[in-house]
Length: 251
Image 1 (tube, rainbow, N blue to C red):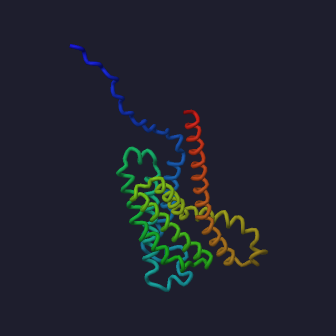
Image 2 (image 1 turned 120 degrees about the horizontal axis):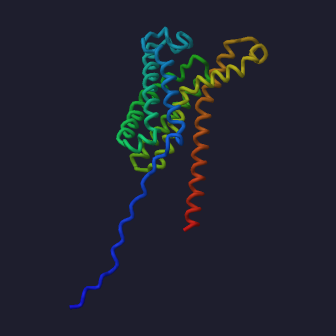
Image 3 (image 1 turned 30 degrees about the horizontal axis):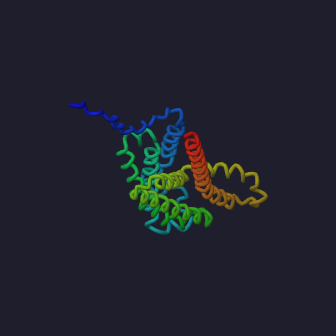
């Protein structure tokens, strides 16, 4: 009997390359980001924890305090914003996202479903009543609309499994949510820049200067963030395209 001819062994299914864990020192922003959020919240929340309106910043200033609903909505916005900022720290932690995807998904749901009504819509309610003038009010309204839009678009992209779009929209959303904390820093920068002009440009009117500082810091706090994240995504996209072209050329 003739022995059967042995054909070539079937090719093994190629294994997907294992995702390498990036060393912590290549992610230098994770720990500082989390620490900055905790420091900001530790200074910002205590004055509202007592639920005493008199402890609020700008208490009694502007038309907002005529409305009984204003302070409860303000407090809701502030504490929901704190939860959203803590959720962001979990969302952008690559190691946690890779090793514990369920935590990533659930923290994302908290960010979206608690954030949209309690941060975004609450902000739309209180923003037009800003006590620091119409410039700040317009900035806060636009910030709210953009944050709601980016967050909703990111969630919708994830539901459709368009994860590249999801990542891009959520990065914009994260950049916008951190405007809350950076507003304080920009206020200090604007105050230092404008103080020498108190007697000239502002005619010695400190109230006018303070309103200008508040308006300027409000705009800068989210526009700079948004420009920076768009630049970063464009830069990453160009780097990825170059790497793909190099790989095709080498093949």
